[in-house]
Image (cartoon, rainbow, N blue to C red; front, side):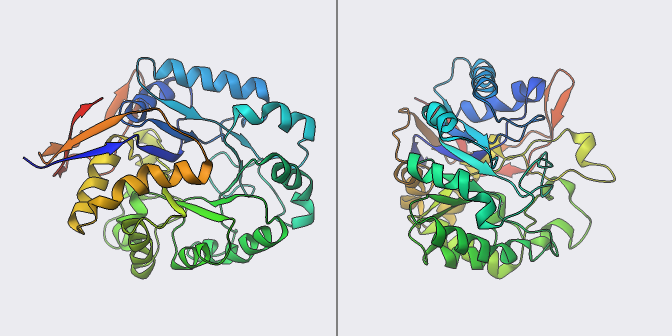
Length: 340
């Protein structure tokens, strides 16, 4: 029976939430991934050393017994001092910038993307070699928000050439093309944006569990993302943007944005790369590229997948929390056989 081994898989964009939801979803990543970059958009957001260390400890407790490192991030603020960032830099892997109100729990994000407004913190980050992770969308028409943000990425890349900038969860052909234009621009891409377009979300009956932000785009965008991932573009890495919401907040009027993919990410990626005869590139996409971009060595962890049918549970539950995963109730071609 066909098998495939993934060495130290890394999820470089992950939402774990907090409290019981954290206890529910975190083990679905820590069981199979060697590490993950954790988003700081809690309520209130993670902006202090005390809050960061406390959150990291809660994550480690939820993942107890697993070989796993949560790579922590701060929520971007324009008034961080050199002393503060120098003191905390060994505790974080990057700082996450959200335009205000653009996605879940981002109301206290940046209200202006003017370079001069951002300069004080970004210059300190450049000096201290702290990467900047960006949710790159404007408040324009929903299908054009990422495309409209491209000039801002270019401005940041030109004004801060020593700053490592990660375009998070890219969804467009334009973003893939921008990767090749500036040495200091990198990107993550999600599982679902490699698989779906807006047609899959709303082309027929609305599928709330596929609704996410940035919204899924056009076929040509998906194809550009897919080709970059399959060919292990050296500046692109896997970041699931797995974003859990309770079932009642997804199956309702005012559906929350987010797709929960953590329990199925490795199985589906293996199936996808096998389909296109690119399995030899999967380890680079899901681990090696991130190691080079962020310059770290992960914990040693080997995940053996076997070509054996796996039925995705309809729902995952813990106490009063529950989450419906992508492909709920459907059958996948690959299963996880062992974790070493």
